[in-house]
Length: 266
Image (tube, rainbow, N blue to C red; front, side):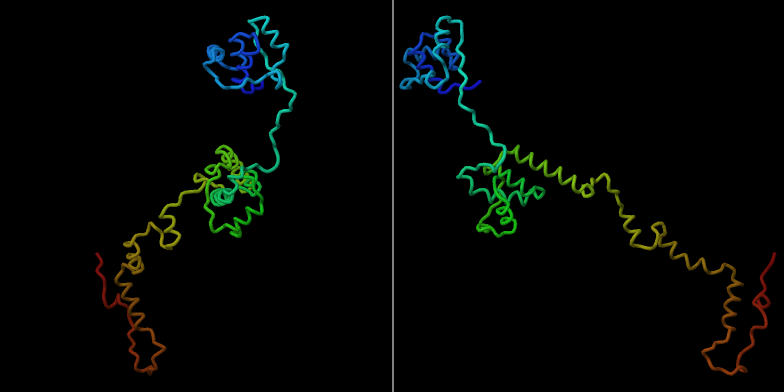
C-alpha cells in the first residue's frame, strides 16, 4: 500500500469539500478523530492550504461518494499509474558532493586496516575507481601528503553493516585461497624449553655434572697391580725420538710387579 501524500493538507480539503465523517477522514489520513475535528473547528492546521486528492490521483469521486453514502465504509487509496522508482543494483555508488572529498581518507583507511579487501570491493563500497585506489596505495595521489585515514563509516560513505559484510566476505575468500596459512594454535605442538636446549646442547639433559666428572674415573682400573704393570710397560718401551746408544738402556723388563710386590691372599 502506497503512502498518502501530505495527509494534513488532504484532511483540510476533505473537511471543506466532502460530507465524510471525522472518523473516515482520520482513518484515511492517518490522523486521530479529535484532530480532524480540531481542523474543522479551525484550531489546528491554520494556514494550511488543502490538497485535492482527486487531482493528484490518490482518490476518485466514486470512492468519496461511496463512503459518503455509508458512514461505516472506509476510503481506499487509488492505485497510481506512475511507475515507482527501481533501486539501482549495478554501477558505482552515488556519493553526495559534500562527502566526495572524504573518499581518499576512507580508501587510505581501508588499505591500511583491511588488506584482504580487493580493489573491486573497495570501489563498490565507497564508489571510487581503481586508478584512484592504486594512486593512494603507491602514494602518487595529488593530495597524498594531506591524507588522514578515516573509517568510511565515520565519514558517512557506507553503513557499519555494509562494511562488516564486505570484510567477512573478503576474509572467507582469503581463507579459501590459502588454507595452509590459517593454522590455529591448537594444531601447533607446544615446545618446551628443555626440548629447545636439547637441540642446542649435545649433552643429554639427564646427564648431570657429577656424572660427567666421574666418567674419567671409570676408565681407570680398580686393580692397583694391573695399573702399575701398565705404567712400567710404558716406561720400558724405547722412545724413538731419543737417539741413545742401545748399551745405555736398562733392562728392567725381566720380571713383573707381581714378583716384586706380592699380594696377600687369604
